[in-house]
Length: 149
Image 1 (cartoon, rainbow, N blue to C red):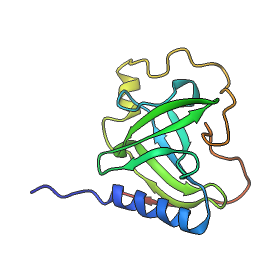
Image 2: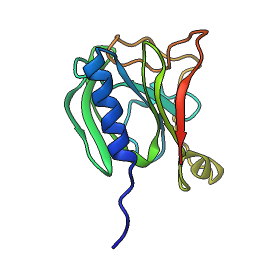
Image 3: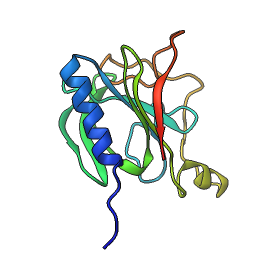
């Protein structure tokens, strides 16, 4: 019997903690061919998503995939991401959360193989509504993320 990863359980736990504290949970995700996100908001092969209950509909945080619907620029989009591609989950307001190692087969290997993961991206990211931010918030504060292997 294969061992089940603790990563999806930790992601759900930090999400629940953020919600209980009135904080906004953000997911940082490495984008590859398995990741269904609006490509125009991908920067440097990553996207940061607001996964609060106010910003998402039909949020399902499974052991293999995370799926939900969110608005980007006022347009509802279906989002699907492999749990393996989540590099961090943290609270927007204070940066507390957890970071994860991304295993083999992620964006770096695909980029080396010459796959075009970001077709037609603009030079700068488009503005989006508050419910789906393309980049982590800028701030001078220290990160409180713990790397989990």
